[in-house]
Length: 445
Ligand code: LLP
Image (tube, rainbow, N blue to C red; front, side, top):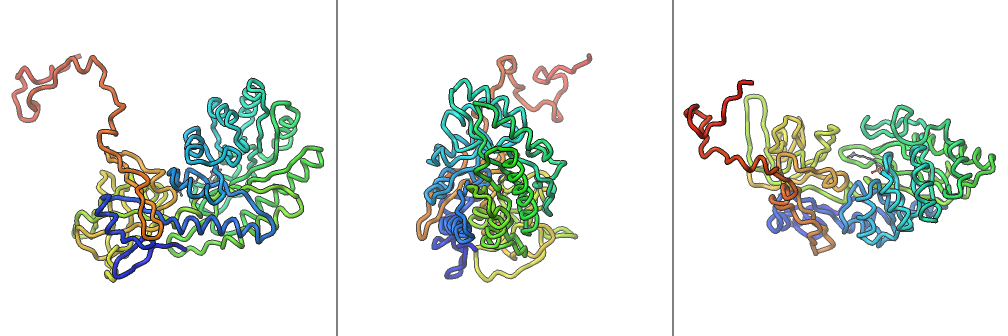
């Protein structure tokens, strides 16, 4: 469900024509619908209430870290799942109360742990035993116990892209199942640690409920074992991972997901935290791009557009599908690849499918680009990262300016010894006189 629809012949974000946004802010441009993301977070919350147990929705900031997005979700009562100092500072800057922030991540540095403890976050999801040593030392020094949950690895491998599966024994994530009881007991024994419960996250873009059910039933079993050991468990973080529709997938509904989670954990009496990212943001955003050229070879037809794999890396990285539609309504389809300007064959937005039969200069839209779109973009090929616009009804707000080119090398430094040598006045090497004094000396050793 989203709010990108045709009105009077052109594609709009809520009530704002995308063409106007392209004219005002240029392309490529990420555009988000406020109504969509608010609807998703409210539905997530109400699905859990209806299933019989409310949950804190800690939005997974990595999916879309823009301050305005994180703030919009915080205004709905959401918290934040952060995985770095940068995300922690961002969540705080966006106005998320520290008491609604969960610090996850497999490789937290001591300075990151310290800052989390200083600002009083809700909990650290600990993934490796060494992290407990650091937390213990920092907590002792600061004189305040560190609230922790153990992220355990339930050894469940969902069907999804190999790169985004996290719950299997072979993955780097979580405390190994066999160690969980001993590690939890050790944490309880420490005066500087305050274990509150368990966390688990088995992967992303998961399209069936079965893996969630199996993983959470295992977690419920572990909670019972810990309690039988006399250890307190009061909170469970069930992670994120619910999939969305990019093409023709039929993901479980939020209501069925919430029912499954609540049923698997029934009778434990634990508080619940969820860490959704994609399901909140993917379909709340699109990437707007302009066709630069049409190109036909003997074998193929290409639409060369002005967004590249540096802007939306998912197709190149995971072979991910994003539907490509025209901003002008009623355009016919043709077989063509939609490719970017980057010097790699992997730089495609759509390959081998039917795409809009549009001319150079027209606008296209890559759907479902609101999660892991702008957040994974880079400056590859020295391209400025795109701007972002948040639409609410008939109003559009620029929430991220496009980068200036000069920003891209502002922190680069040419060492003095390189500056002492004046560059050659002419390009003598290209067909020039090799004896010319401007030519660099030939190296013989
Ligand atoms: N919690 C933890 C501990 C996670 O590692 C993740 C995602 C989430 C929550 C949120 O998962 P979601 O609800 O968004 O599935 N870049 C990839 C996705 C990477 C997901 C990483 N972890 C993509 O574009 O498909």
